Image 1 (cartoon, protein in one colour):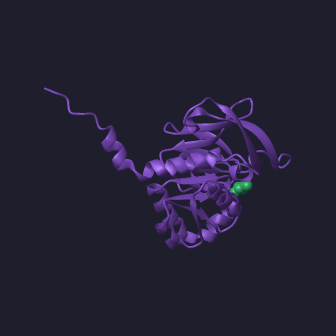
Image 2 (cartoon, protein in one colour; image 1 turned 180 degrees about the vertical axis):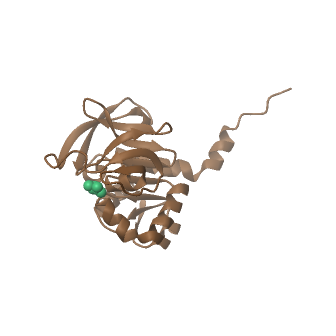
Image 3 (spheres, protein in one colour; image 1 turned 120 degrees about the vertical axis):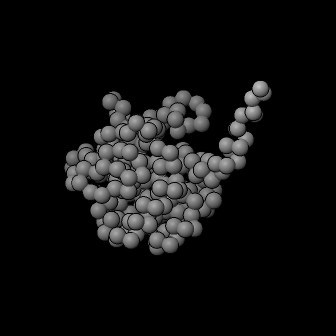
Length: 212
Ligand code: GLN
């Protein structure tokens, strides 16, 4: 299992370190054709508009095909890229996860902050909701969560969704790669693993035929 980290700009190296700590094999993806070599992709934080420019039309289309078929996880600018709807200003998204997201939604005064949020049971295999350190840097805000989207982490007294999952796609508005806690990256690795063996899983679970 090889996990790619899109390495066009932003803090891709911190993701690489987190993934390697968890024993994953990592490929820094700088060219579109490298997408063919990986089983899952992390799109890091940075500046989403700059990502779009660096990707170009061809890179964007190749990435769109990839995220439709394989697991991907976007953090901050990466979450903006994966969304269906982007505001402030409007911007194209890859449409991999049915959320509306507002760029730079916290204003300039609180450009960056470290807060404590909640990791929900949906992201934890067992156990109950637990505290999670979250680093926000010029963070976007998820303003709409589509029907098929599961919230896996929240923040603040209004329980704003800050990490979400839909099928093979995950997105977080904070930077889990900048905290020591590896649970969010582990959640993504589990997702990639699950998606790699869908056939054996469904075969094993298939109920025995009913007797007539
Ligand atoms: N503000 C950036 C954007 O709109 C995202 C910030 C980040 O990735 N830390 O793309």
